[in-house]
Every structure is written in C-alpha cells, then in structure tokens.
Length: 391
Image (tube, rainbow, N blue to C red; front, side, top):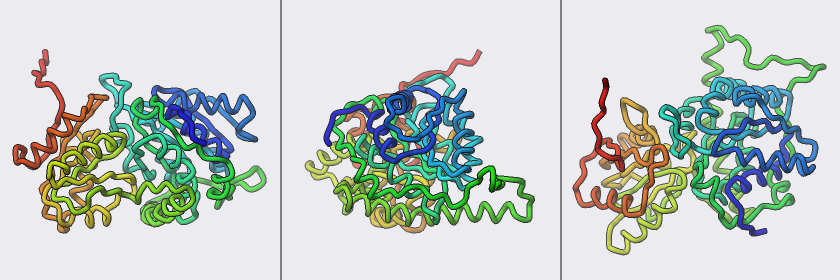
C-alpha cells in the first residue's frame, strides 16, 4: 500500500509489523513522534500483547529493554543525541550480554552547545560498543530496515544489538511516498522470536556477571567473532529482502559509476543529493562516482578495498569529528584500504549541527578536488571564518 507519510510513521508502522513484545522509550527531539505513533497504536489495541512502557529517562528505557530481552522478549526503542549517550552505559552492557535489542537512532548533534539539529556525532560515539549500525538514505529504506534489523540481530550466529540510523529532521519530519509493508510479507520474512537463552522465575540465569581476567578476554573475542559473522548474515538478509520486496538497497556499500577515477563517500540522507550532483558532473565528462556506506558496523573493509582499488582521489564526507584527528568514517576508510589503493584521501567534516549542504556547495567541493585546487588531508568545510575569543 503506497501512502504519503512522515518518517516517524514509516518507522513506527514497520515496528508494529515486527510484533515486538516490549517497547520502552523516553521522548527526545527529533525521535519523539516515532514512539508517540507507537503509543497511539498501543492505545488503539494495534500492538497485540505488546507492553508499552514510558520510562523515566533513556537510561531507564535501555535498562528496561535489557531486562525484557533477557527474559525472552523482542524489544524496541528509539532515541538520539544526549538520549543515546544516556543509554550508552546500558547499551554497552546489552552488547556484552548478547541481547538482540533493536533501536532506531534519529541522528542529532551532541551538546554543548545545545543543538537539536542533525549530524552523526551521537551514533559515532557508540561505534565501539559492539552494536551493529546501518545508515539509511530515505524513509523507504528506514521502513524496510526494521524487519531486517530484527532478523540479523536475532540470528544465533550474531545475537547483538542493532541500531538503524536515520537523519533527524531531514528524514524524520519529511513526508515521502512510502510503499508500506503488509503483515503477511513481514510474517513470511521475520519468524516469531525464539530466544537462544532467557530467564524466568522458574529458570533463573545470570547475564553479564563478573568476569575476572582469566575469562573476560575470551568474551570480547566472542563479540568480535559475532560481529564478523554478522557481516555475512546481513548480506544474506539484504539479498532475501531484495528478492521478497523487489527493493534492493545494495549490500554493505552501494556504488554508482564503479569505473570512476574520483569517488565521493558518504552516509545517510545527503547521499540522495550527492547522487544528483555526481550524475550532472558525469554529463560534463567528469569521472566521478559515488559510494554510499550502508553498514558502518561491521565495517565494509573488503567492499571498500574492491571499490577503491583503482581510484585516484577519494572524497570522504563525515558528519562528525573525532576531535584531535579527523572524521571517523575517513579514519576507518583509510585503515581499510591501506596497502590496497594508492588513492589520495580528501577528508572533510561537513554539515555539523544541521549546517546546510546545498547542491552548489557539494558540487564546488567535488570540482575543487577534481581540478586540483585542494590538497589531500583533513579539513572542515562549510563554516564561517571566525576568531575564538577566550577572556
């Protein structure tokens, strides 16, 4: 059923079709209307036997999900920015406890200074937590990603939390025509949840308990191995989804114009505009291609090595910064292709705190690199020159 809806609703409707047992959340802009829509569905009796719990904070919401997941429930939450950071202590635990929690992060800048606008600093701060991360380009992809997230997270070869990252405001508040899934399609794709292990009052178990030095490291190795297996499981699930729905969003990366000399690498909603810019530059004869990174954790090392093996220049657009170094995507990309590509890397931090990235800005950025007006290395782009005054 094709319908024009906002990003919030496209996610909430997809969550409903996945039949979660427990939804627990705390409101924070710009994710609030996802859980408001789910609360309305719950009040209208559309969520079956699900429990909808309003927590006292994001820490409480994540803690409730950990308890419910350990008790064998399929669970969901949504958050962003300071809310995600407030969840972070619990989410690190959830990954170590191998609980397949699914959450949607509506990417928003971190304070201070206070900003409610979009960048990727919040989810990037969680990149080492043992949580799978996928970045979506539009609301149809966000809608489609929720059932896939559950299927990957609950696979016994994986059993790790899964975070779907969608740009706050740019996607959450946008109206788009969405081909809404139906219950029969989701049921045929996502089986009822059968937890590998769960505790009851009659069968008490311990999760995440004390691990002295002689066993702690083995558990971290097991998490790494699970993340490595997740990559293959995700590929299987992506293919199955494409065959079932006819919507193939690509693998871990999606490459436009693979024979190009110059590539732009980006994640999230800016990819749609970049695709238009790249297509126009190619019509002028520029050898420019586009790489959309979908899966950020596990990182698509082999895919990027293959895509960039013959590239001469690579422009990486990061929506966050590892302060004191450069953008996290660029750091990981350089590490991945080292020794496999001789491409020059142009690492740019752009669009922080919701700073606009209009078409002419992106076009100039690419032209400047293509025509030799930029040097390889890291730089902020799109900011106003200023003098910091410290009293």
